[in-house]
Length: 268
Image 1 (cartoon, rainbow, N blue to C red):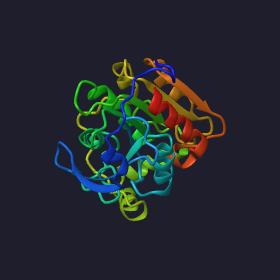
Image 2: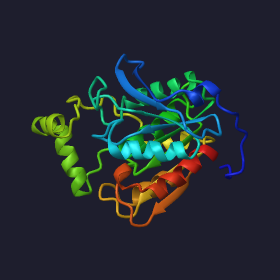
Image 3: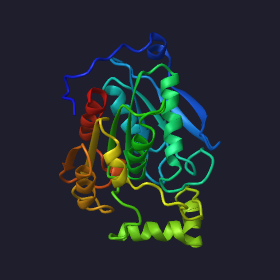
């Protein structure tokens, strides 16, 4: 794991610095349309772009995601936010972290097409599981990540050890629950079970090295207790931050923590 002072960075193309935010509809490898937003940093100092992967029921336009994007941009990086399939204005149906790896890969490729030689990914909750699996599966491709941070991520699938996760399983697995997801949570969920079961986050971690990896988790996370981040960090080469008083995912990440994560992503 490199220290904050290590690494060689190149300046971003001037056209990226001076152009304003832009929206696009990206296409994944399985032909799903994904809404994405690119925002150049007002003070770009490196060629890094940070791609933000939101949690389940989130979207590119949710306030917590917009706050994270703003803080990361203030750290000197361009930022891409996007809505996973089944969320926001994206097409398709949510597969709870399985085929969402293709959504993230499309956003990372877009960052490289825009001229960024270095792309870091950060994911929250479901998005945290996606960035871990993406880092393992795409590490030798054009859509790879150069640094990865997973915040409030599960270590293993089918976890039902907390009341919020039992409620989530009801939403995902029951017809009435999926109606609640569509109309109450604005999230369209695929009714089909995983076949095959995808690589789990903890199985992905050993495949990520030598890409720098950061695991962040709150000690008041109501969804996933602390054995999840400890299991993830212990499965491979990773830096672990256990945050006192923090709850779950992007809604619980305050600006001070986001700034530290942004510094790590741009300097790891």
